[in-house]
Length: 196
Ligand SMILES: NC(=O)c1ncn([C@@H]2O[C@H](COP(=O)(O)O)[C@@H](O)[C@H]2O)c1NC=O
Image (cartoon, rainbow, N blue to C red):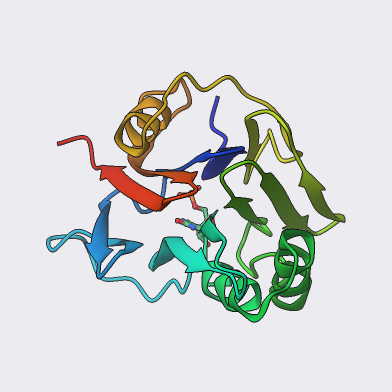
């Protein structure tokens, strides 16, 4: 099954996978502690605005709570800014998702995102027909296609590197690259797996 990009979040852990039919020549890089998706050096040029973006950011709230934000586009930056201003995770997800809306491409591709705290997790998506944002107690997946409503998803990984590798290896078509995050009271750990 092809489900496109997907986010998995649960309390303390999160992961994001790029699956792609159209732009497979991409990888995750770490730019000063932010994980960014972009084309590999030898990838064909594209002017598609949705192929390069920050997919995972670490955030500290005004009260000093460490959080990780994961998602499939530029809304990750907007969500991080809202969290840094002190918005609750629900509002920090809902506001940018609604403002930016689904992607204006041939598929009306949804925007998906999650916020992970040490003991909390919140997941969201904006599609043409819905804006869904919910707090979750167990690992939960939302994807751009097919599995496009938040739904329980087992993840065995306990660290960021294992989380990235686990979702990269998950049995969905066209895997490209993945990122993982863990959050505890000490802070946020990030990792990625480009399948190399
Ligand atoms: N975030 C991404 O990495 C991403 N990659 C591709 N898209 C969009 O989704 C469309 C379909 O891509 P694909 O055939 O690779 O599933 C692309 O034309 C592009 O508009 C993306 N947008 C959202 O997922």
